[in-house]
Amino acid sequence: MIVTPQSMHFSEPLALQSGTAIRAYDLAYETSGTLNAGKTNAVVICHALNASHHVAGSYEGQANSEGWWDNMIGPGKPVDTNRFFVIGINNLGSCFGSTGPMHIHPDTGKVYGADFPVVTVEDWVNAQARLLDRLGIHTLAAVMGGSLGGMQALSWAIQYPQRVRHAVVIASAPNLTAENIAFNEVARRAIVTDPDFHGGHFYEHGVVPKRGLRIARMIGHITYLSDDVMNEKFGREIRPATPLSTPSRSADSLSPGSPYRYTTQDVEFQIESYLRHQGDKFAEYFDANTYLLITRALDYFDPARAFNGQLTAALAEATAKFLLVSFTTDWRFSPQRSREIVKALLDNRRDVSYAEIDAPHGHDAFLLDDARYLAVASSYFERIAGEVLK
Image 1 (cartoon, one colour):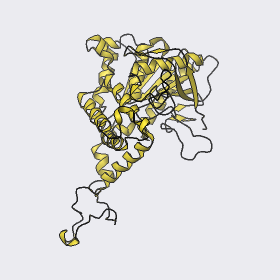
Image 2: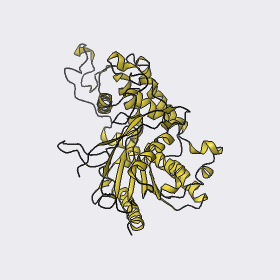
Image 3: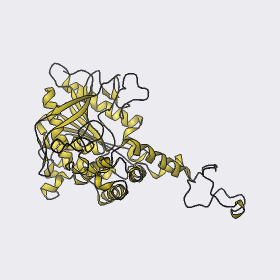
Image 4: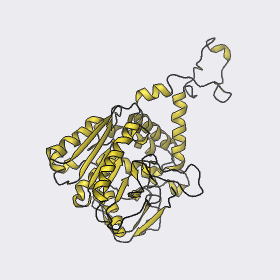
């Protein structure tokens, strides 16, 4: 399936939850499938922290350009683009085409940098709704997302209850725990204390805070995997010594036959090598200010806050039918958090389906090819198709 990136410009100011507004902006998006005559088969896919609008399919002439959820979305897949019109939208403030910190501030003529306004999950949903208005789509067959994307799907059902028929919330939560906020803060501190950060205006200095980005990604990646997966993939395996990694010390000072190099700086274990590789890749393509913005949006999301912490009250206006999926080894967005949403919906007598998948992969399970998980999604979208394609 070949897809083509698109962009839509908005000149009307978008009011933000922070009390400020963004005067003009662009949203990058992609579509696949065909919108039916009644415009009833549209599905919005909301992306997680480091993903984008490129959810499925490939770019023409580009090898290895599959979308980040290509195993879920496409012809004959659980979200079948032979039936559904799928829309992936890049969040405002991202670094993959939508207006963000790397773009020019229309009032100053300079790169936004640290001056880009704070955005929230609710702001993203409002921006997405505007794009759908332009496309002439009023009602969604479904809105779907995993992790941070799942928070957006939940927020869609709350903010625009009459526009959402189904909300599919995967490996997500109604808010972040203190531990999750703590992980985000440590990652942010790694970035802002990088000497190349320059208060968020590093673009003007021609540098990128890559050291901070590497560490932030390493911290995040640890939380996305389960202990079982780490042990299975890497265990305590030692990397072979190489001329570049062998410490500059006399061989006589090392224990005879020892596999260790006894150094505080070299990469010795395979898990160290893996994390550094992930950090190096991330630092080459992700924007530091975007990382700060998106993790803050994660921290701020808490629809129950306006209802004295009562999630049931927060979800009282939602009229959509729901599918929630969690994974047993996901300790960052644990099944308990999904069950909180399920209970709140049941308290409101809403139509809810819930699947808890016994999978070893940790939080990343929502991106992987677990047959049971994909079967659940496929079955649910069969149900949706039966409703909207009559």
